[in-house]
Length: 328
Image (cartoon, rainbow, N blue to C red; front, side, top):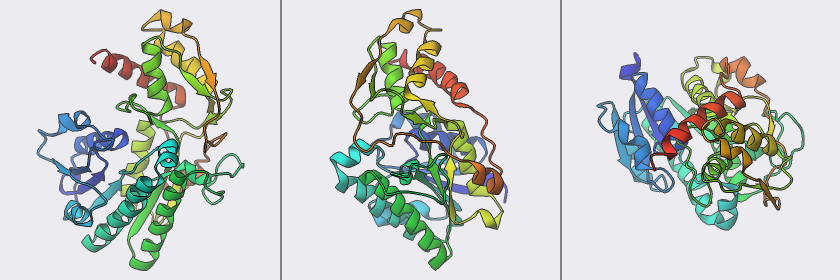
């Protein structure tokens, strides 16, 4: 099958990661269906694709099985990105997080199974490592979850494993590590740290770091994540199926260093940003102190070769934000 005759459903396709995946696979000649209820996604993320004959927008909710069945009809692959992210959101409202991330996920698995979808690739999470203190994080060693969100993402892995073993549905989970890049929303109570800090610095507002800033993260640029989704979706290596992979660069950066680089790169556009003070607040409930991924498994079984380091990705992201925030 040529790419143009293949179809992919991207749930949460109007979100940050989903819209980047929509754009990429349209450029590759796939027929792309985007399923989104716009709870956290944005219409402007997919507006450029609406005139593309290979793009279909289906507005609906994964909590409704009939909608899921409609979305997977005639689809070869599912890239399941739809979820309610954010540890604090799940702590504030565990019921809705569970409904979307667990019940919605199960609906998509059932629909994919019944429709004969070739492969189901889904967004897992580094939060699954929980209270495990071992570094780097290796896929086969996890701890106890530290938040309702982490529980939901671990349950996704358990369900995917059962569907592979019981029904023969090919599944691959991608444990995302702090993904960032173009189209990540800087607004809202649950905005991710990088776009939120970019917006504050551009406005000359002091970003607030939770804790002393020595917590570290394996910040992962969006293009590395796109590569992992494509590899997971298209691999013909049967050993690579029905498992989970860390999706990261394989390096870690402290929050203090992250802010340092943000100020440095933004100062190229506005030198006064270098003088914006940084404020420290209390540690955040449910936060993992350190996160660093081993990407050996993905290298070996999927031939994953991440192209963007944290600094390379951040420089590109800052340039994108500077251009697009100026339009607001």
